Amino acid sequence: MSIPALPASLSPSLSGRDAVADALYRCVIGLDTADEALFKSAFTTDAVFDINGTVMDGLEAIISQCYINIAKMDTNHFLSNIRINITDEDSKAQVTCSALAQHYRGGEGMQPGSVPLLAGSLYWVELVHDSADGLWKVKHWTLKSNWGQGDWTVFGK
Image: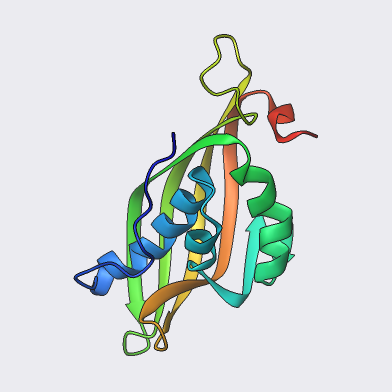
């Protein structure tokens, strides 16, 4: 069973801080539901995604090096403590937040005794407003994991 997806552009349109936060939500929900279109809607084509020092430059690199691997897993990403700063006449924003992400190998999340990895991270995200579609999009995302509980090999490494 899959969960139905909402469109990238919600109705009525979001404004202000809610619209900025929605870019992060589109990313993590896109990962958790393997919705590539929703995930892509969160990024500019030239976005940079830095995960603990591993830098992916451009949306295609982010898809091939991050999305493809995570979307096939059983995951849930939770964001909290979100702080948003909107600048440059509502065209740029910065976000900091805390995140918890639970990861299981694909198909194993509901199996008793499955090996998990729960990671706690801090996010620093720079976004721009895309006037073409009205969505806020990630320009640069830095993720720093502070701790992990479980087995990092769930990522297949």
